[in-house]
Length: 108
Image (cartoon, rainbow, N blue to C red; front, top):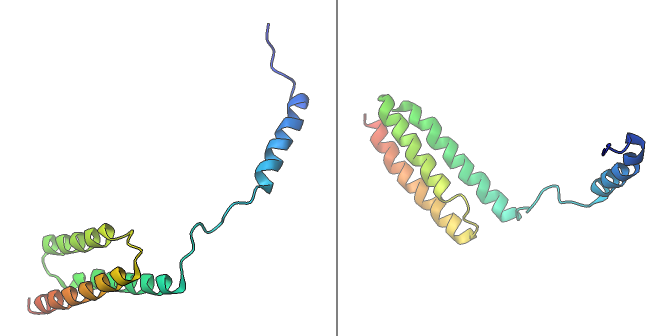
């Protein structure tokens, strides 16, 4: 007949396990961004918010949803780009494309 060990005998092993886990250094932030990456990320998020806000002016709900979906898909597709030159290129291209789209929206 196997009986589980009394709690008092398991306690020292549990303390060692908890103590080892609590004292183990672990990164809190993961990979940190450089200042330039941080600034570019802020610019990208600002463009995304601008696009999402501006789509409110599209009168047709289906077209509005499609435009938002396309914008989100583009941003998601390029989410893991880390090369600063490529990020700048995508940001510049995105702004240009959005300005062209905005002219079309204003004409509706």
